[in-house]
Every structure is written in C-alpha cells, then in structure tokens.
Amino acid sequence: VLERIREALRASVVRVGEGAACSVTLSGGVARYTAGATVDAALLEADTALYRAKQDGRDRLALAA
Image (cartoon, rainbow, N blue to C red):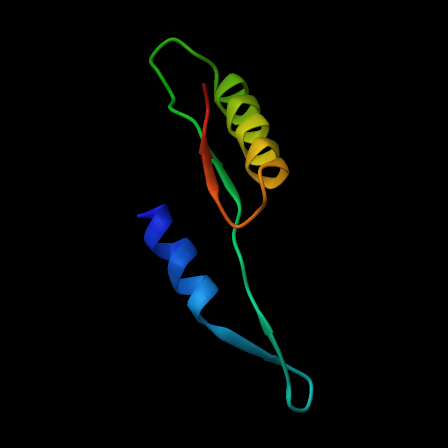
C-alpha cells in the first residue's frame, strides 16, 4: 500500500503559487510491531529505516531490519 502511495505522489504535480509546479516524493521507514515490544521501540526502528531510505537516495521505502 505504501509503495502505491509513493508512486502516486511521484506521478503527481503540485502547483505552488502562480504557475510554479513541483514534484512530490515520499521516503518512509516501515517497522513491524510485535507483541511484547514497546511502541517507542517500533517507532525507533521505523525512524532508523526512514533515514536509511533517505540516505539510499530518497523517494523510497526501507524496511526495519
């Protein structure tokens, strides 16, 4: 689902001001919440994956290890 959202954003054009247009991209980190873990731990894993996605070239998704 996130990959389809990312692709749809990349294909769209956003108008800024009068006539100016720019593209939109999405980088994201995805983590799995497992029973017994804390929400903070899952968010930290997703955040780490997000920064890895940006470092790897942006406009991509990265899964937490």
